[in-house]
Amino acid sequence: MNQILIIQTASIGDVILATALVEKVHTSQPDACIDVLVKKGHETLFQGHPFIRTVLTWDKSNDKLIHLLQLACSIRKKKYDRVINIQRFFSTGFLTALSGARHTTGFSKNPLSLFFSRRVKHDIRPGIHEVDRNLALLDLPDGERARPRLYPTDNDRAVVGDRTQGPYYTISPASLWFTKQFPAEKWVGLMDEVPAGAVIYLLGSATDQPLCETIRLQTRHTPTVNLAGKLTLLQSAALMEQAKMNFTNDSAPMHLCSAVNAPVTVVYCSTVPDFGFGPLSDDCAVVEAGNRPACRPCGLHGFRECPERHFQCATGIDTRDLVKRL
Image 1 (cartoon, rainbow, N blue to C red):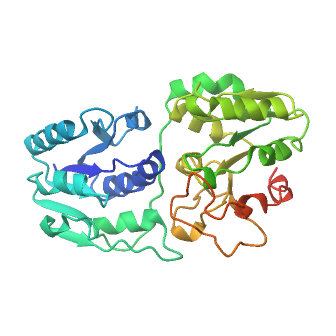
Image 2 (cartoon, one colour):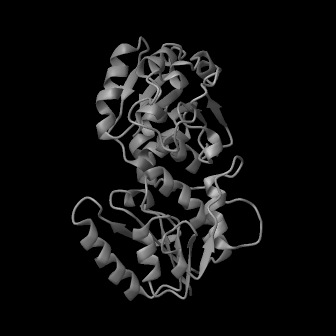
């Protein structure tokens, strides 16, 4: 029985997209033992996952280098047959090269890819999704694209069960990057148009709670409930599954929707879907500024402030385009 380790210690959204690779590995090798390595704090995404044996974590917050060396020793002792490294940074290249696995695969951009047994080009071009770039690491015959997928448990669904009665919408208004975040007043404008009788749930992490509360206090729509910091990622996904529509930025909640095939409308401010990180749900739509500023996109991940100081990529978005998705 093959033992396979998949490494992705980047952001939550990147980890969610990596689950498509887990699905494909399981489909091609149903008897394989699949482990994943993620950043500490992201392991909750895999609670109750039917195809994953063990979740390894790397604590990057304290004694990062010491933990990296401990991980390297632990991984080598496990004697994996194959290590698949999705990331393109030295640290995960170090873990891959020293894993002792018979087969090591990663992207050629990784500075230690010279020591991998197989290297793959990381091709960022319009029309190529990050899921497809990741799946290229498997070197399998072309077939049906595997989608990212998460598995909320019965307990996760029970936690949000009372909230799924009757029509409701979710809005995830925050982002790690200012230039990827739709302005609060724009979200309020959308919420004021939500049909009477439908509940709005504001979702996010504990750090997003103040933003969500500000938005809740400004909207005329009732009932609006601030759930930021009150649900786990899988519980949020379980709530999104049955929503009439989920509204997000180009951020992790969009990928949560993709992973449970929930309906989603994504607001793109400074970034563009052509980067390959767009929504994958059956019912999905992208909303952008009608008059695209010449400076857009200004970066792959966004910035803490608009480099041109006008933020027209966000302020130029017509809220009526989101209202159509209600």
